[in-house]
Amino acid sequence: MDPNPEAESKVNSNDEAESAVNTDSSGFIHRLPFRVFRSAAVIAATLIGCQSLAASSSSQSAVIGLLPDGLSGAKASFLSGFLLGQEEARACGVDPVAVDWQTFNGDHGDALSTGPETALLVAPFAADLRVLSSLAQDRKLGVVLPYQRGESLVNLAELDPEGRLHSVLTPLHDDLEQLAADALGQGWKRVMVVADPSDRSADQAEDFVETFQRLGGRVESFEEALVQIVDPANQVALKRLFKDLSWKGPDALVLAAPPDGPLALRLASEQEKGALGVTPTARAWVWMLPSHRVQDLPARPWKQLVLEQPAHGPAWSGFQERFLAQRGHNPDLLAASGYDTARLLTLASLAPSPVSVEGTRHPLGWMDPDLDPSSLCDAVTARLSGESVRLRGAASDLSQRPGQAPSGEASTRLVSGR
Image (cartoon, rainbow, N blue to C red):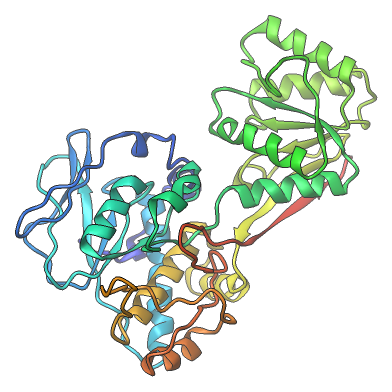
């Protein structure tokens, strides 16, 4: 497969990227089976219904990268960032690591084949961590998770006792925490959380509730459940929601719904008419949606708080500047994860793998979360001397601790009322 993203699909990668990194525990890809086969030449196969990872022969590469056959926009975004990371490695005077790219194929039943040289695996979109954990421990592989942000990361601690699974992205919780903290910072201490059940962001609504309450806020509801699930086609449910808002009078309404969808439009119409118990400017809205879905949000008479930038690492600004100069558009998180993945793989190839406490190789065991983060060139120098390093990350802070996802900082934007 040619991994060159310059023949990039015209499909916008934002929705594909969101689906890939946000729904690993509940989305379509993760729900389908991922099984392991073993033989002399085959150590793993990923099955998706009748789909599989296809490889014609046993790989002799030290690194295998798995990419989906579909999701062309998201795949192109990841590979654009990956190539930029390889270019940076060359600028530091080292050759980037060679990767045997393999792909999902919906028409064949062949298995992913690896050889005795394989030490690192770049996991596919929304991978099943249970299987990856078993595979990594059985074969003493290092596994990079470039796309994992969803609920599966909650189980990372119990699934990764040896610290062989390395997430590149921050969890979605970091975005929700920033939204909750900044809503409280605006003085909105009482909120109602409303979700359209057809919107994928509704899956994170309960996590937002937990975070908001933990930070000192109060979530109002007339129901036992604190998340108001409202089908906009249900007129009875809509009228009840309008009445609940009027009675409870929260400081802000938290919405997990499309801004141009029927639920948001009906709520906006009622609030503009003053039919929700407040004047049109009295109650703010907080959009619990990814940044690309609210970047063109129309101004309303009231204030609106949106996610401006999902959680990312300290090297984001420099990466964004270089990516924009070379590609002509701003990167997304998948591009940043590709960039960090390429640099991590290159560093792993510069010196022998450390030995774990069990006496087995640990291909990514040289990453030390307690060190100060360094540039790639400084990290290259240290790795060539056999030293441990912590790379300054773009997609996250790349603080790799066993059983934990790295962290990052998100930012929000306040849309002033007109």
